[in-house]
Image (cartoon, rainbow, N blue to C red; front, side, top):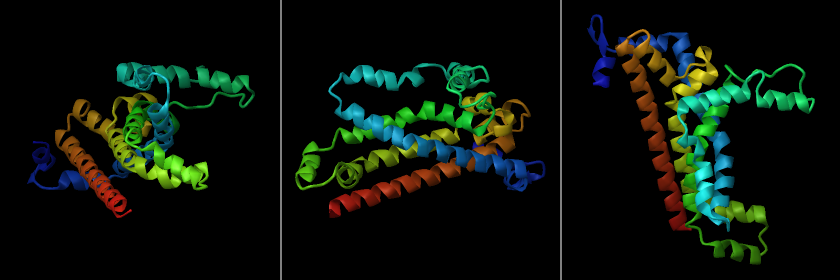
Length: 250
């Protein structure tokens, strides 16, 4: 149905909706901004996921409470969570108070309605998914491999790069793809933290449906997002196949 609506035009059936979107500079900027923000969120989430995922997989503490702590962002409404960030990142929020307290700045730093505010909010929401993906991969690692590498004279960083990272790679790829795709489809967080000047594709679709009631254009934007989603999923699948072939060859 969405595909059909995306081809509906005043003159009949055609690709005018897609052509109109790509012809407007603001829509092209929205598409590029969406993929750029999603890429940054993914890159920032990867080291968080690796560190926290390895800790959860190897800690001697009870894993249940720690997992609950990691999943806390998903236990709160996205609206409440985003409004919480507006309090933390506001001109009179905790972050600006701390920056002034240590003497790093005299004037408030503008986090809200800027790219940084949106990225912080999205990382907070989606990084736990990468943590869980890396943790699942780490739980299947044989720790004897690291001990063997250490006995053979391998340094910790070298052991991580040559032994641990290849085991974690499938989890990192899967988690990164999920984080990227979900960031592209985020609606509430970009609207509340980024404002209308930092619109992303999903936010634009929301406005086209509920504000301007332009369903054909919203459907065309949805199809563009769907095409990007399928492309990312295909790339992730190809990377998985490559990693599996490399491990079998090794």
